[in-house]
Length: 167
Image 1: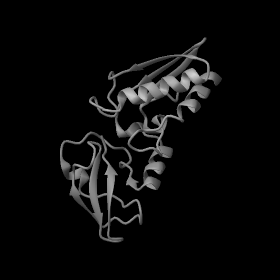
Image 2: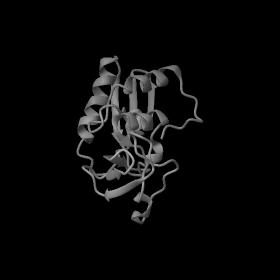
Image 3: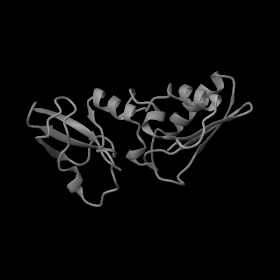
């Protein structure tokens, strides 16, 4: 995650705003910045350095995301230097509040606040429905269409929905 305690210069802040253009390929309402995939971003002269930490090691969209980041940087007149790092694993805690709100608006329940890596499926037993905010929900399948989602049913509004898993 970007170090909020570190002073971000005007060019670095501008670089982050440019990177908001790059959307998650699976959830196009969510930028890589709000997803927490962009873990470092800095401008040094004519070079824009960006570090990315994908949500999963085997992320099939990694090269596409990297290319899109490079294209945005190049379009703004800088030389891109984009690296992928697994030094610190991605976690759903890296998502911004703006990103969590975008997930909910998209129809995906965001991961719970202060999510921690879990070793048991108990944490997934219930989720708040993104449509009606109901809590009378039931886990139907811990394995959704991607590794990072689970499928639930809301007994209040009678709709199925997905939750972004806490990782």
